Image 1 (cartoon, rainbow, N blue to C red):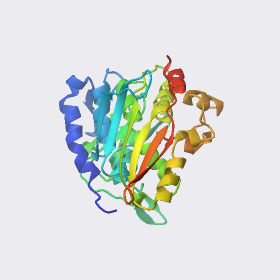
Image 2: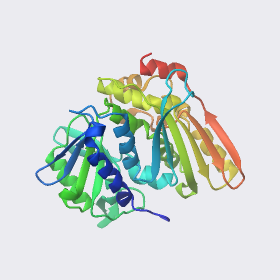
Image 3: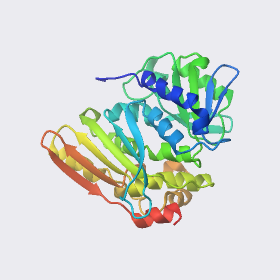
Image 4: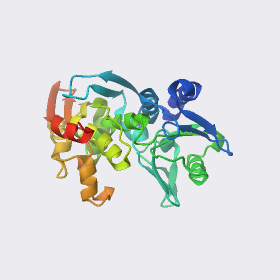
Length: 322
């Protein structure tokens, strides 16, 4: 991959920022017996929106900026997260995408962030990267886990081994979905879900050259399914992205028409209800649902832009509990 900056080196200052400002950000920092640093961003501590914002930038591999602002875009939910990265394929798919399944006994979690770019797996006798054709190299790394419990030492050791780093040079950040920090870092995936769907639609990733997205920050909910539902619905009903692409106008227009969440057969009710309908089996849900509500795709070589999708205030209000 051309211009493949090191997502691990870029995130180390952000990890240091979290640790150095732990009291200010109301997060917990502790060391395991093997030297691994564990950051609690909302299990036994309050955490907050700002912790979530920095964690979202860590998930992006230091390849982008995440800001929190108020926006008049939705009728009732002005608090919004804005995400921009100058290399959305590397930042979103190479780092932010929560594609690393981690399990030990009853503990299960998805990992995201720069550690994914270090992790390798053996395929057909060859050691290959876990994601994309991108392999980072670094002595220290960080993984973000969405869970309401700290990971067991076995998972920590598994991550260190897969990344070929000393456990003392590994930091694991844990963000519960029902926490403020957890909500922000999930909704900040608004651009990443667009990249992932573009990939699933077989749009050539090398033709995506820039991107930006925003979505309302959902109110937290103590129930895990409802909390997860709200973070998804923020993107499905009110996420908006603008992607800049190379290639033909026809390809850009086709991407714009196929990207919005409303193209999915499962679109039309809050995510928690859909999840329940499929007996809480995530993999039964149409994968094409996971995308922003509204998209603009600009073809940079012609200057033409194509817009599709829509904001749905009624469904957003229903999900967010108004």
